[in-house]
Image (cartoon, rainbow, N blue to C red; front, side, top):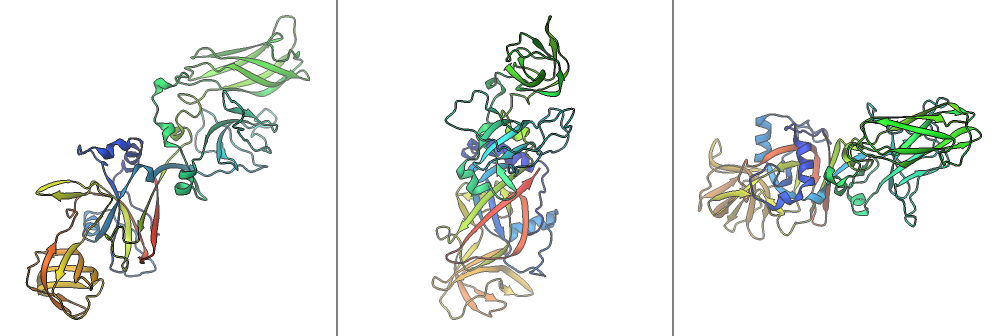
Length: 456
């Protein structure tokens, strides 16, 4: 498979808009990406069939794809999904922990064996373990328990925020050894729906546990935790064991924080010193509010399939070598162009021929007039010898009824009785993505499934 081509720089972000607003597909307003289709093209062979060339980003190349289109099939909103790198929880692995100041990519989320996805809010990082510690207990949400914050503390010292469980339907279409799907429904939110505003403080982590503190079972009588920042409402209490800090309980996560610090002091009449705390502020809206941004999603997967004849639309004894995406192809209804909106279209010029002997050969050029200067020509996609129907692509000129049509390779000559012009208006729609592949052979019982992985 060759490297795909994205000629339009804003393509992937626009695809996400399309996905997040599927109601656009019901409108005919002329908006870009109103209708998205997967195309198949190019029946003639590559110069080297075992090594397809890279696509080119030129007007000439794009026009040739239009000329060699075989068919287009509609991409619906449930065929598109944002995905993130698959990171399966594994015992003995040290995971990164979320930080609002992080730069670059770190493994701070995991998928467990139940398809639950968690975000690491604390990995044991401390003055002793500056890079954190190994995770040895798999994070798991028990649905029989009523979790109010969806934050779990595992016995290995990790703190995990439960984000979502992978939907079985999405897993079937978009899950593989490299990617896990994100739930798009979780992205369709307005900030007004979040009571946390610009962010909250879900956890306060201990960087230095200090010494000489007095245990009060987390009641806040021997120590005071002060949280400073630009938000309001966050409160916490310390849990002390063996005269050192063992845990910080966030009793109110507050709201509207963009930054915060936390400090602990011993109350009057009690001892304790040296502890250092880190108050980590959540993303806008809180952890899990915007998974696309929060988990660094930069990839979408688009799936589609061409199933047997597709309702007698596609021949099953053909091959092709290009697949890709096209937006807003047009059809003619009466004399008025409009956006295509049906499930599938064949991009062929169909010619009904008179009875005769012999069979036109796939990929050969047929013509009317003189071969050196034809009045009409096209490339054979398929010949239905039972119904005497010839399906052509890459046509030039105007065909003449009751005139012979010549095959350059087969040497067949038959009279043209009738023509049916292409369902799609030639050269309409924007070619957005291209993959050049080795020959893909269709069969009468076959199913071609494609998964296009696009980065932005």
